[in-house]
Image (cartoon, rainbow, N blue to C red; front, side, top):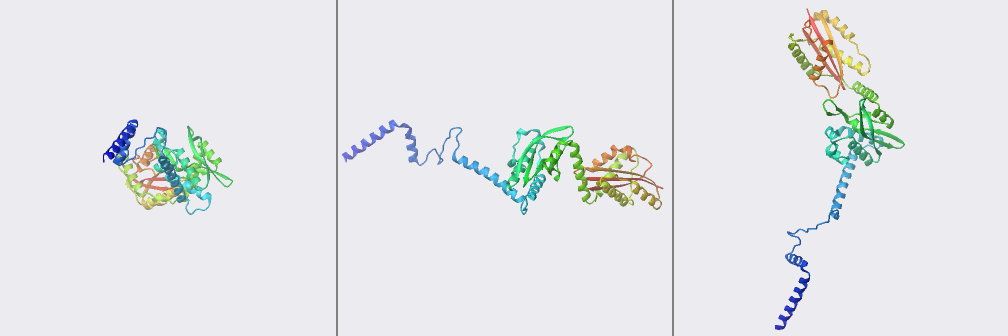
Length: 369
């Protein structure tokens, strides 16, 4: 027993001497016997600045892979069932222009926002370089070669801007596509983006360069497209606009100390038909005439006991549909060309129709005996 005691004493002295030489290991031993390292069951590993753990790399790769997978998945959904590359090109263009809005706020302060294809997919709004980046990524995801282009453009005769767009190659043919301009336009007066998808900016690189560089040609082609689209649309009569317009006109009359107009419904169908005929002429690029309407009123004068009539018709290209108040302001601004404040007329027929982006208003100022 005494011998065992001596052995234990020797072991303790050796262990004490060892720990005295290696004091930094003492906490590790104590923690090990407590069953933990670093506190509360967590392993804390401090990395020097500039180093990256293997786990961080895995997570970063996962994020990039997920973004790429989302783009690939979206591209597949957009082009589902389409077998030819040109059809896929059009599908990508149509999707981007219909689903992505231009970010007016970001355009004013680019440094405060993110950018790129993934950013645009998340926010669903961005500026030209975001559009071009997303369009290229979607096209490449479906196997279409695409490039990112940038340079100066002339959206109006008094403006020059830096811009981005894409070129895409199918076989031996190159296409130019600007999904930013194709998505719509910014109402400069109101500072608002108006979503108005158009195929005008899916064309050849040469035609796109002309649209980018010649404001007058751009305006001509946009109006040409508007006429084509309006000619394919059915005329829509807007009775709510007609009623509201009569009310606003009578308020203007009252402010001028004049008696309000009496609504005349018997000539409403005639006024609407005349407006529809005028729309047909305008969509065809021809000047419209009021001669047929004047002739019809003369034929009905005896039956209706119509003494005299004043005709006012105007056309307005606008998108979205202007409010009745905006139309009324236009009529008031044209007061000298209307019979708005003439005391000799007692009744009014108002016809308002829409055909595509075209609005036609026909007003009949009437006096009966």
